[in-house]
Length: 613
Image 1 (cartoon, rainbow, N blue to C red):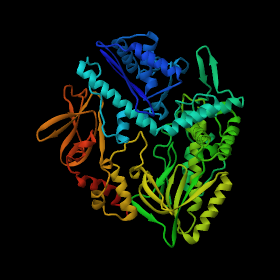
Image 2 (cartoon, rainbow, N blue to C red):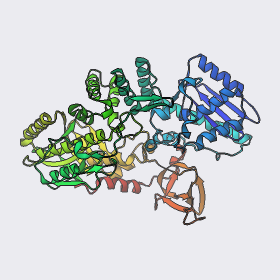
Image 3 (cartoon, rainbow, N blue to C red):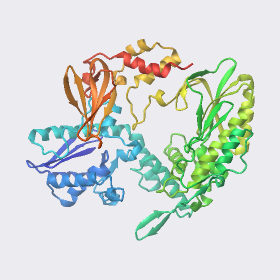
Image 4 (cartoon, rainbow, N blue to C red):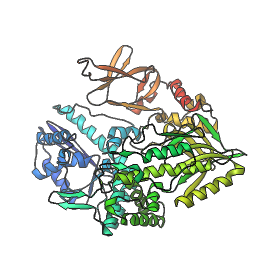
């Protein structure tokens, strides 16, 4: 594991063995220059076939280190200037951001980048190591101790090296939480003799699919003196009637209105196609969107009982099977695309669900649809995108229409790849009949699940409990956060679930909750801003990423943001958790300084529980 820090007069490199408490520390500054020792250490790693693991190391740390390797010896300023050049290139969309990258074949030591593996280089998933420290529930969360560009003194350098080593320990902790992902990539790399080590999941799926297309003789790229460019089918315009299956027709005038409107549209881009497109059928609103159809009852608890049952029907691998069954394919890839798609789907069934092959094939199957609307992808053909999303929504409407004829049936939800109904048990056989008829007509398969109860705030926020007691959580009720998501205040959805499913009392459950980390929240500001806490007339600045909990007698937390152009010189003061006191807790030892203010958490739990009739 490794991490670097760069300042105008000091460069530090901290290293730790991934599986042992062995640590190394190197420094290049006015007082010492470890250039020779660093290069000798890297040579040792190379000779022993070691791998270096970091966090955004391919984008930052390794290019700086590579500069040192090529020079043989450097001063701190040279490495700092290289680091600043990398940072300043990040907003250059003309290709400048890639100029500092080091090709895999040129790397002195093999690199693994946890930042890339987890796809945090995607803007929508961008996650700093400090945010991971919060989500990993680290004992301490430490921000950079000195502003970038500061010339450091001897004591400050000591502090910096401690901070550098701390970052390596945190990266090491995240590495161990990522081992399954790394082993998965190792298996694929060994089996296919192709480097998957720093691929995110989506890229693994895409590259495997491309590999199979090329093996079948389908050209995916054009090659020239400028390199390779993906073959694509850009379309200046799309008549949506060309994307819709011709046999689709409805009984409902509302569904037919939407269908006919869609067939009349010619679009020049896929965004904005479905603005305000809603069909109300039997009092239920079907909302169409590029990402799929959705609709739901709201603010309600629905239960199975002696006379009624909640049935959930989901289409098996909906988008891949829509393409396979109907022959949808990007025009430039031909019908061979469909044959390979089907082969991959059937191939996946032959592997155990938890095997590396099964995981990789799932990624290959699911990644194609999203990539078909990317101008950078070999799968780019927006007509293929629209064929999948339009027919996916319309076919679910056909299913819903058929089910709505059943006496006593109530539609609960429809969402992207399935729907949920509550039906009299005596009429469940009619659901099975409608399901079989839809499957025969579409060539698709519906998987059934039975819910014991559903607590629904809206289509994106609900809890559903299966007959066997397992729980499905969505949106505000989800407490198993992904690494790039905000894992703050988890006690709120956890307690709400106990209240809704077990009938637990809110206040008593919160007061007896055993894990203080579940009460922790976090906030952040960019480097251009700062956080401050006001308590007893005293204002103290906090680090830009701060963990805290709502506390009795706590201080008031504020963000100080730079002035807007219309009010130059006037900094903006924005309250965080307005009206509540907080206790900063970047060191978990501070957790007991003030008592938890349970009233805040009670209020938040009530928002998830009250109003569900």
